Amino acid sequence: MSKVAWWERWDGEQTHWHNLDGYFKPIVTRFFITWFATAPLVASVIQNYPSMLVLPFDWWILWLASLAYAIAFGIHAWRCPQFIKRYPTYPAYQARGHSPRWLVWEFHGCWTSIHTVSREKLENRVVGKNYAKESSENPDFRKEPQVSEKGTIFQFPHLTKSYDLAIKEDAPEEVVRDLFWEIFGRWTSSGPKMRLLIWGLLAVAMVLVFVTVLQDICFVLSLLWVIN
Picture (cartoon, rainbow, N blue to C red):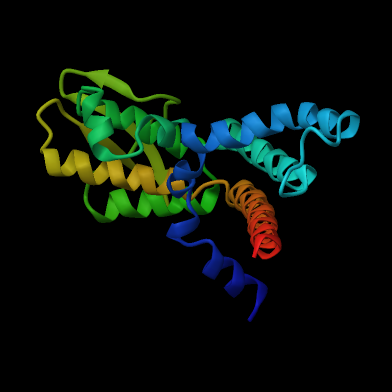
């Protein structure tokens, strides 16, 4: 399998930013961060008073798992797109009560931030679905969307032409929803290298936790064997 084919196969929907959210829920974070903070104290007690505390696993293995998780957590907090954090689902976006016009600003923020390949894909989608229409013969590109009574408009170049993405206050709900998911799709698939690093760190953390679980099981079974 070629390098490109491997990368495309790995970088599928299941590895995107929105699927990382479940690994950074408070209940999971508390477990790892608590052990990361208390492990040095536990190690000190074991070293100074070995008869008082006996752990059924190696404390440093779980500490390394916590360290890997803490690094992954920090990278996620730093690099996960704000759009994905604010709007993990379309109902979450609706709950903010934004005007339909606001999506033009979200489109602009995405269009100016993502890499070239994703930008071209976003342009192709909105042009192909006729959400953005070809503008006048004398384009006047501006850095930000323009607000008027007719709607909020952002003009961008696509291929050899210029297009206007314009949304009015009375835009159909299905158009708003579909445009939301187009923007969501480009954001959640961004930053593949950072996502790969986070997934790798989480995998290391899970493997190390699994090792401690096996140690715990072996410890209990050894006690039962002695009892019997």
